[in-house]
Image 1 (cartoon, rainbow, N blue to C red):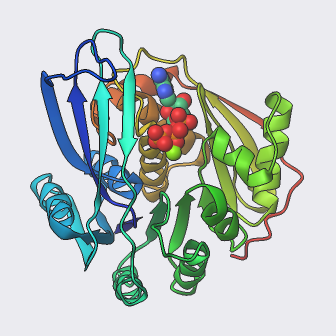
Image 2 (cartoon, rainbow, N blue to C red):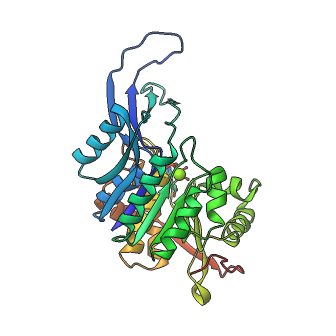
Image 3 (cartoon, protein in one colour):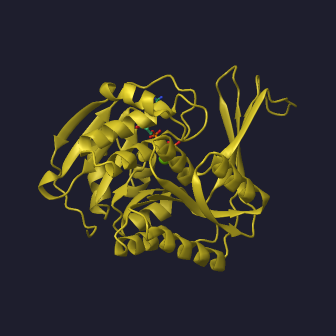
Length: 323
Ligand SMILES: Nc1ncnc2c1ncn2[C@@H]1O[C@H](COP(=O)(O)OP(=O)(O)OP(=O)(O)O)[C@@H](O)[C@H]1O
Ligand SMILES: [Mg+2]
């Protein structure tokens, strides 16, 4: 079983509004609402890839109830802790005439300490039957930036593999605690190592620094694929995967689909090169769908031969993360 953790779950509402103008009154020609938040998107993609997955996290108020109902309707196993404050709704206005997308994200709910304790208990319980735990997205207000790091240590004690996809302080603190895999996008990776990357060589050094900070393995998503350091000991290698960008329907959540693809391939026992090919194809295929985390496995397979993969070198880094 794979667990995905979403502490900032949301209802993602998308409105299609032609000729959207500020300060005007509009009528949406189309509207959709689905459960969202990074971990939820990863769970949706894993489900589409036929993997056994359970989504957990916290959800509150009538919006929290809708999140849980949407997940259940989609057939995504879920077990969320109910909290007092209302979960957020994220609204995106898509203008089909210009292709522009405007996003308005509400503040997430404040999570009380007792509620967080209930969540940690639930996670530790679920972890008994899990092989992998994915921590994805930001932390809600009131939650200590060290939470992911603490949970990563707990998972290690239980023998559960951890995958981390976050940003800012929670990513930094948790990376130092030795997650098995970190999967930031380029901007998040720059934030993690504290500088902007200027070229391919610089990205490669950045990735190595990221791993030196404590992650056992790392994959940084790029606009045209990814760069990764995977493997242990003598098998440790640096990879670069590329794919010609597709004309997107919506690229929101492509990183979540990438992560799901990587985890699905790893969980299925594929080798590192195949895992990266599959992850990149999943990220790309998901851009052909409107909702975050949606993809079609058949189309992913069709894209696979188009992913180019180079094994660059054995990086001169040793993971400080135990395992
Ligand atoms: N238009 C596209 N065509 C093909 N692949 C794409 C396209 N857009 C993104 N991808 C792929 O999707 C993966 C994830 O991309 P990106 O770095 O944008 O993730 P992200 O910023 O974490 O996205 P999100 O946070 O919205 O999930 C990458 O491997 C990238 O190559
Ligand atoms: Mg991302």
